[in-house]
Structures are given as C-alpha cells and as structure tokens.
Image 1: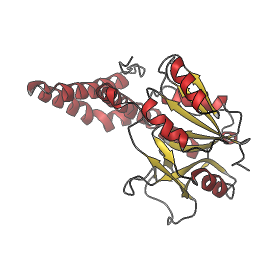
Image 2: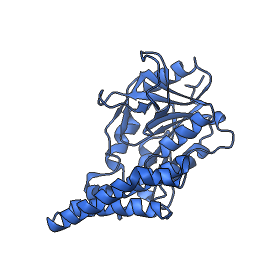
Image 3: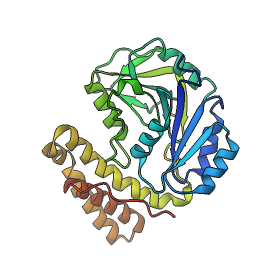
Length: 290
C-alpha cells in the first residue's frame, strides 16, 4: 500500500520557517517519515525540530539553494518510491494522506497526484491547457499541472531521476516538472477527497517581509522568461515578457518620483530579474536575510 510508512515519505523545504513549520508538522501523523531540507546551516533549527518531532530528519544545505534544488535533495534522500512534497505553510486535514493514498491506489499509472486546496474555493491549485478537461466531481481527475505546495511524486515514473529543474531558484519549477511529465505521456491527477489548507506566502517569518517581497518579484520575472524560453524558444519568451520589462521600468521611475521606496525597489527587482533572464544570466539573486 502507498499509505504504508515503508512506502511513503514527506519532504518539506524550509527557510526561516520557524513560525509556521510546527503547525504543518503537527498536522502530520507521526507514523510517516518526514525529511526537512533547511536552506541554511542553522544547527539550532535542526536540533529543535528533531527533538520535538521524532519522525523528522532535518538536512541542512548550508546555504539558500532554492526550492527546486532542495526538493531534489529531499526526494533523493527518501528511501521510498512515493514522496509527498509540501511547503511549510500548509496544514493537512485528518484524512489528507489517507484519502490521497487510498484514491491513488485505484489509478496505478500516475506520476504526480495532488490534494485539493480548500483555503479559498475561488483559487484552484491545478490547471488545464486550453481548458480541455472532463467534468470534475469527487473522483480523481487528470490535470495538466498542479501547484508545488502539495504534490505526491511517484519516483518510479521518472526513469532518469530528473525531477525539479535546478536552474530555477523559485517559481514555475512545479510547472516545468508538470509540463515535462505530460510531454513524457505520464499522468497528473487531483484527488478531491484529499484536502489541504494552504496559508499562502507564509513560509518565511513576517519580520523578513520586505526582503522576501523583493526576492519574490525578482525571481518571478526571471522564471517567467526562463520557463518560456526553455519550452517555447527565446523569441516567444521575449514577445511574452517585453511589455512587463517596459512597465517595470516606468513604474520604477514613477515610484522614484513619488518617494515610495518600497514600491520603487519592488519594480527595480522586477526589471532586474527579467533583464537578467533575457540576457542569459543565472538566477543569482538571493534575499538578504541573516
């Protein structure tokens, strides 16, 4: 059975996540192994978490290497075939894992499966290309992509053990994985009976809000261009993003003239991230958090 503790591991990537991680871990039955990949060298964080949660093993990367790279470490450390990727700002319901695994056992040929987010019914943690999909009910249904904050990966469907693209620091790494999965004729499912709460953009403590916002805007723009260039070509990516480049500069100048330092920095970050991606530079920006 997938739900057996011998077949199922949970992987969570953290970075300055002390405020939310315990809520997440408290919602997980301790019979399941959890691997935390902490994007720092914080030995106190590792000691504290492992002392409070006997089912948790915390691995320190030594530096902030990004979501995709850290998730890859967790997936490869997991001794099980089935790995549930979670963000630290999620909370499972009592039946999240049971319903996820019991429903997916009826499918047999999935590469990725995801629970359904219930935090905001207007927001979906999945999507379709060209809106070509069948009617959704309470049975598992195929999708083209799912959000990365909760996704179950069937490692056996990835013959070369290539999971997340490590060129992407954050944003769209899950879309990239899902796109490659579909292109390899594998299936992605959402399991409506398995539900999850996602608090959204709360993985890092609020005291670092401004710096995290700067980083998010930089990487969002970098990743948009990189993702489109990788899958559709350089000129397609340029056509899709050049207006964002111009708009970012105009708004940067506007907020400079109106002395709004936070907005000014945000749009400078957006311009910089996109510009660096266009000229082929790696995703180098890191939040200035000690």
